[in-house]
Length: 488
Image (cartoon, rainbow, N blue to C red; front, side, top):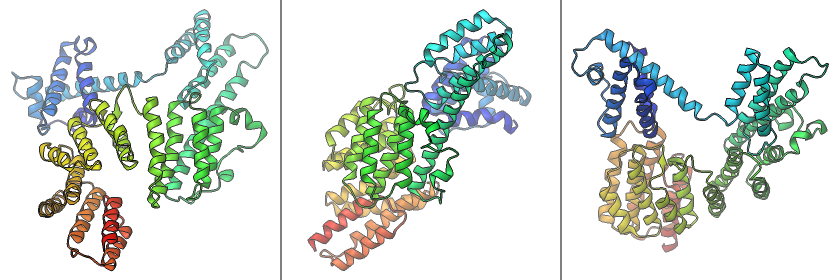
């Protein structure tokens, strides 16, 4: 049988999403890969895996099946199979390399040409390409850390060029190069520090005060060349609000949001989204303290992201972002916006191999929130959800919709079915399984309440939910108990 190293191509395939798998097959069918006859079997293996997956059949990874896909008229040969897997792995690594090259910045090819002509000693060609990148360097709008680092590398390349060819007694471009290195260092250090402070906001990490943690003084006059720039101002403000962030810092975060918006066209969308994420996380903390009105604040930000297109990558949206936007929109009672958002993106999902089920679930959830329970039930009854997360969410939504519609006879069976689902499916991630099991348990206890429960009985369940670390649909459960309490 094949050694483990030769099966690495299978691991790569399983890590690819559906879009990446399609591009992988297309790459292996390109002239670069198929010009050698020996490469064609690797392409046939790729097609076999891709088609096997698309038909939703279990992925059987036996050596015999893979060999038969590559060589349908030959008997299994271990040597030939190992050669096949080695060739497939080599081509797959080339595919990954080509995918990474697609993400290179606009000026990278010119920089590589500068490097090449510097090494070959062609001064005229070096200067030609050096002039090409100067126009790009003159405008730092929307740069990420990667562009700042490449800006430094370009200047460093000129230092090396001048050190070999310049006869003048000048600084050899070292002053500009060092300044660009400082700029890159500031940006990366501040970016990572803000990310750490954001984590600290969610769960205390016993960090040192900022003035002790940073290796430079943000208030020092010598550093104002950086902190007077739009990105520098935003990082400085982010440090302030994140370090001092607490439940009473609402006004400071609102002011920071205004600053982020004012510089929105001058900084990279990547940093813009990060700054907004810090604000959103703070608003989520407010919501967790019971301040539901902050869903509206969250909605304003996600709507801004969607309208600017910053939540999309090549016209596609990741399912995690999509799910968050739908959830926030529904909680903020922005139902019309949510429906338009769902329909607009029904064919634009990335991050799932079951886009139709994902779309149908969110549509069912939308109908639940506008109290069109019959439509929610119809979708849940009609659609078979393939991925585990949607199966979990569908079970929870089914219980909620039967509770809200007052169909208590069927509700009992739905609760019992969900209980068995979480009990039997041990492969579900532990936390999600606990959340689901505890939700089902709380629904069982709610359904066991007498027709006219006392306030004491309801308060006991409310306290139990509030102290339960892992429970799905906590807010909805508390809302239902509060409604029962008002009737008692």
